[in-house]
Amino acid sequence: MTVAVVLFTRDLRLRDNPALRAALASADAVVPLFVRDDAIAATGYAVPNRQAFLADCLTDLDRQLRERGGRLVVRSGDVVEQVCSVLHETGATDVHMAADVSAYAQAREDRLRRALAAGRRRLHVHDRSVTVVAPGDITPAGKDHMAVFTPYFRRWATAPPREVLAAPRRVHVPAGVRSEPVPSREDVRGAAPGVGRGGESAGRARLAAWTRSGLDAYAERHDDLAADATSRLSAHLHFGTLSPVELVARARRRGGLGAEAFVRQLAWRDFHHQVLAARPAASRADYRPRGDRWRTEEQAGEEIEAWQQGRTGYPVVDAAMRQLLHEGWMHNRGRLLAASFLTKTCYVDWRVGARHFLSLLVDGDVANNQLNWQWTAGTGTDTRPNRVLNPLAQAARYDPDGAYVRRWVPELEGIAGRAVHAPWKLHGTGRAAPGYPAPVVGLADGLTRFRRARGG
Image (cartoon, rainbow, N blue to C red; front, side):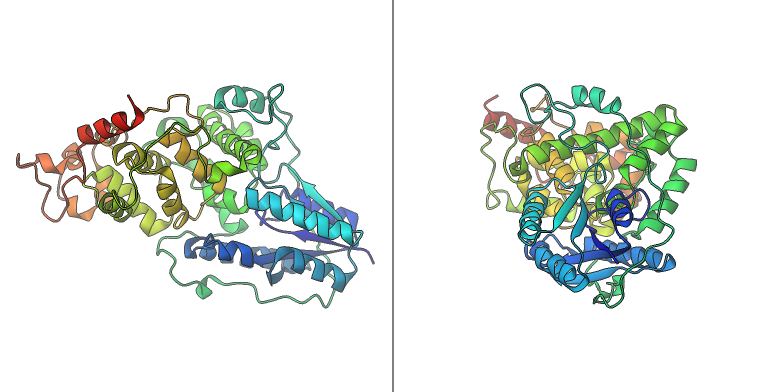
């Protein structure tokens, strides 16, 4: 009996899983393996919100495998050591996994390939599982990636689609392969109360409901903060419980302006992945250094703390930050506003904000999080690096009657209409409403600080 191993990483699903399909096609039996990686835990990346969601994903994956005659094998420790241990126990010679783009993922793949080659075993890495288009498939002449989104999107949109793969009907796992218990959400301590349910089943239910009721209006409503009209599929994309290839295929079948706008957002996700694949250091270093003289954490400590707690005195920023604290998720427009406020108004290094987001976001993806922060800070791929988002103007546009603010800032729920966005103006005293702080910095002062530091 021939045996293959499929190493699940960020592809925790049965449907449209190229690595799983290839493993099943290549052998009589398959070991579906997930390794709780000590190295990821050591970096601090394995935070409670993501661990709770991940536990749901693994529980659901194990359940679906058991329905098909198999099971999920869970190990803890070093990924390479655990994979080699399974190969030794089963006599397997081939390992299949999805390609990924972070510096850590690339190093892990390289280590695993070298270890397998030393034992005359083979690693098969499958593209177009984490992304729609493989990071290196779209490149300009003489360069390894595209640095501007619009020309990238033109080529991305015409790339031949990959076939969407069905889930397997049967999965045969060799007997006797040791496994730890599958993690449970109940084992996780410290997760935010509003963290959503993970797993392929939950993701597909969310996708079906949103396709029926939200996709068609996505183009005109996705920036409406109070409407909460985004797909909320980002965590499922991050953990791979939904396939981005399938999402694009379903949206294109649906058609319409909403589907087009949604597909464009998936292209942005691929764009960031191809940038990070080519420039792994962009997770920690400026993609385009501009000589910023960021205020230090010591200099800006009070403003940073107020921003983290959702007490900056700017209600739309505070609402977004409190949503993050409660749900481990934030509306995309809120992410832009919160990031712009920290980097452009408080003039704090984008890495401070990116680190805080990664400590809480369920969908905390290194490519999207870090490169979106850099885009907003003006050190990334934005062609207008001095862009500043005014929180009052943005609130008037994207939360015109203040419903989003009142939902997340209860101190202000008694203030009707758009007056809620500038509570310090209510009494003509320059002070905030009772129980709510005054602005930590004036917008004009922040803009002057930013322009001086940038040399403008």
